[in-house]
Image 1 (cartoon, helix red, strand yellow):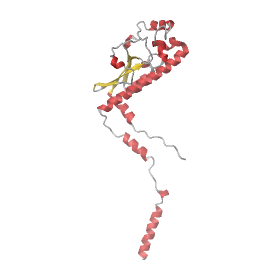
Image 2 (cartoon, helix red, strand yellow):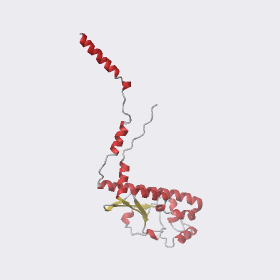
Image 3 (cartoon, one colour):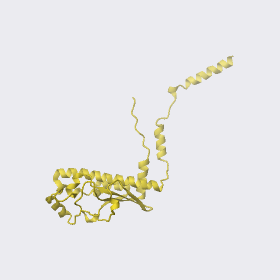
Image 4 (tube, one colour):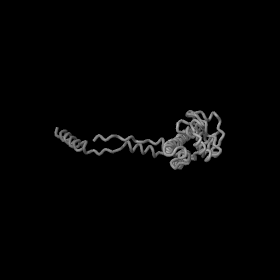
Length: 225
């Protein structure tokens, strides 16, 4: 019986030596797993690149539109159409240019009835439906294109693009014609498409944006104590 008793005593002593407060657990194992997965080389398929082109186009043009509304509201309150007119160029904003640089993209606005002749384009009516339609294509292996309608959905825009004599005063229209003698961008109504955003994107920028958008992000956990 003594050998059995000795073995039992030894086993109990071994277990007590490995108490739970002496075991070192790995911390942030889920975060480590997420980072490991993010660093894995993943194959991006052609359909993924087209999806990313839409995401990137929406991000770039949406950001430009939001900044345009912010600028117009501030400038119109500050000094009316005379103050706002020089700022109706969202494709040239520093914030738009900065994001376009990250995406390796070039953005422009196009219209059948432009204010600036540089924006003149022939756009079929089917491409100007005031909905959420997007035209995404890959003309070459290294180039992607994106297009979506520009819809007049803010009443502030009517002060420069609405009906002359109703929405646009004679004085304001004289200012517009002075800056843009060949202006065609009046007579629009709320909800009407005025033209389209057109964006060209290089493949590396599209691929990088896809990686950024699909990267797993750990949700912060609240501290319990």
